[in-house]
Image (spheres, rainbow, N blue to C red):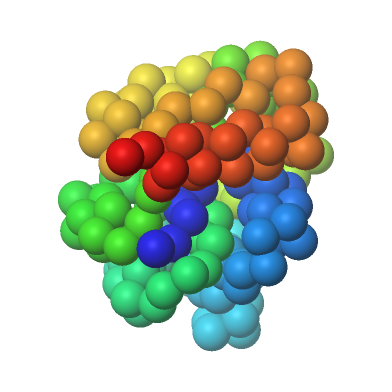
Length: 173
């Protein structure tokens, strides 16, 4: 069984995954990091040179491969759940946690992030976040087994909450 973290950028997926790796002794994979490593270029470079469709196709291949592993922690890119095949792959051998945060919280957390190009040019940062969150809401909900609010919580708090959910889920009779 894998632990899968989904959610918009800035919700804490990578930070929480690192803590879970330490606490649970599981291997951790970040879909974005695997893509960057395989492509030997940054995500903005991939998108600029080949477009979002190409990036999403590579992401789908990486997710399919990683989802076939067992006993890993997987933190996904924010848009990974947009494709149905990704949601299915993540759920088949994974307990999927949707890390959520208010648009204002996300904006404050990622304001200096240059690793992702804009998704909706011409919008303010907060408008883009709000719009993309609204567009992805149903996909996140469809993929998630458990929803976790991250506003006002540290990554350590969130990791503790995830572990508690795991224990309660797997110790029920």
